[in-house]
Image (cartoon, rainbow, N blue to C red):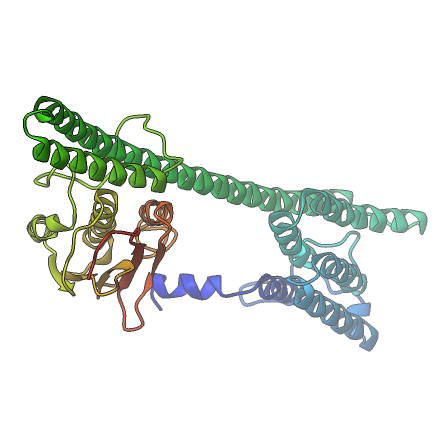
Length: 410
């Protein structure tokens, strides 16, 4: 079995499975210590009298039953599982003729401590550690009160391994919490960056529209007395430009134009300063130079679109195609622009690549930050966005951008 196959197999083992394995391994080690193995003159540990009798074997079987039941409970009721495993350690140590609970009988307890420390709240984790250490202390105290010898050094070694397992579990929980906070912060930054990008583009759109308004107003003022028809035409164009700009501003309410362009934005080399769906063919040429063929399909008759919707539609396609190049492993993808719905513009980008594992390609797996930006851009336009694996393999991104009243997309 290769390493790549064995790792997922190990990940499928439940915490209870690891605890049961640890108990059985400890039990096997206990038996081997009391048997003369090949190459040895005698066994490492002399077997006690009780372990060789029926009552000793019965106690070992009872301890094993308690341990296996505790391992079964570990995922659902970790506190109860730990109590069963501690009881198994005490019962399983009794017929061995030892002065303290051996480390082999505490291996399953160590696994439970790690699981509890890694997955449960800090207070519950601390209680579990105190309980595990308290059982060791209580075992020594009972032997002292009974006048028997005690293995203080051995008990300290077992307590040390329990504390180390607990600390490793706490470290794992802190690492997961830190990773979750980092992902949340990165996603929030991605949303903010996309909002800033949209706001910068809207700023340029408004500046362009206001320039047209200023020019038309100046022309109307000069000819209003001598050529009233031209003045009325200029005023009509001013009205149209103003209405479209105000509609775009309302759709982008909440985005503020601050900050500088983000270095991770999709490259715009060779594209117009304010690209739209008309630039898709040029985008396909640029992407083909990167080794991925882009087939652009336009369904229905394209009609004029508001500039903010046209630009946002292009950005969604551009980011989706960028993800195909970077992460899918596909050599081609398909872009479909559907104009048939008079109330919305439909976009689909799909490929037949291998997909991508989340840890290797965070921009192409449904939780990645490129998709976060696209979803934010579409949401600001009151649209619908979806991204995920295709049933036949590969990846698909779809977006539905509603068209405002007065926009035509036959």
